[in-house]
Length: 140
Image (cartoon, rainbow, N blue to C red; front, side, top):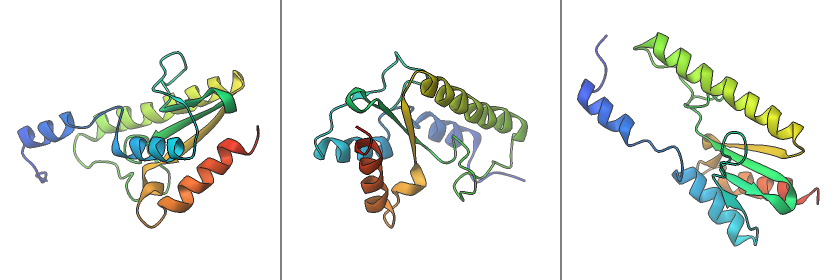
């Protein structure tokens, strides 16, 4: 089956995808900052270079894209139909790495929270961000 885009267009589209400072990350960080929380972003000192590190609350927040991190049961986490072998290796590898990083951080005494891209869609964003704030500040 021929894909929707030519190889060149698909390559260009994939090259535009960033690993940090994505719109969902910026949205989460803006909300937390507006609530008075101060944090470090993309701190390489910790496993997985977390998107948000809140030392005062001993909490780390990852903002994951549903496709890239294989969000279970999510419609945005569909496996591509072409080059399946590559994508399975890539996406399942991402998922395993995420689990390793989370376990390592928890062993170091950090509370780890994952916010999924689909939870930041218009119909869910307010309750997701409110829940995140509560999760961060509840155990001080």
